[in-house]
Image 1 (cartoon, rainbow, N blue to C red):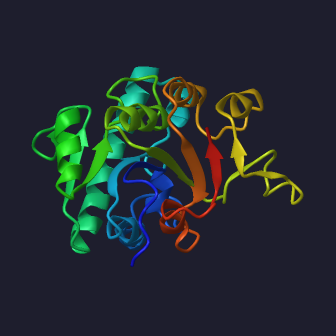
Image 2 (image 1 turned 45 degrees about the vertical axis):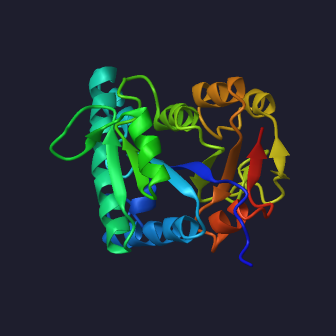
Length: 238
């Protein structure tokens, strides 16, 4: 008998850098294909998946702000960049035979559905992966906060924060080789320690609504799938 997943519905938060590969900027089809293959592994064991993707590969609002750009303008540009990433990932998932829907918090009906909570849930119940673009639709909120908000709205059992590090450490493991890794940590301790797992708004939202978060290295072979099947991988924040 095949192993049963510990979680039936998850929200996966990935950075825009996941579509870059080694190039540092833009959308690289091979990187999108690799991310799609990872998602497919989890999809095939019966997990319902929604994805929120960032825009760091295309646009960083902090760069605009550093040159005097209006914050709302910079943030809206970032939201539009997340939609480009969502479409690229949807295309890659489609090529591995996974039915996908892109929904956006800013309406652009020619390219995606508007975000409607019950419709997103229905898509997942019918076996579709839902990619949620344009953040919350509002400036001053990050895609981390969008991921936390959507995880609550779609009744996800877990928010997975995908990184290139295998969990949460007390200091930067790239700088300090003796840095301690946390297997579990509370929301409030991660905030008080300033660990920058997610922004404070996202962490507080998860804490207030008791949404568990797992931080893991998505590019470590089978890490997401094995965690979903119940193995202790990454760091659990609860």
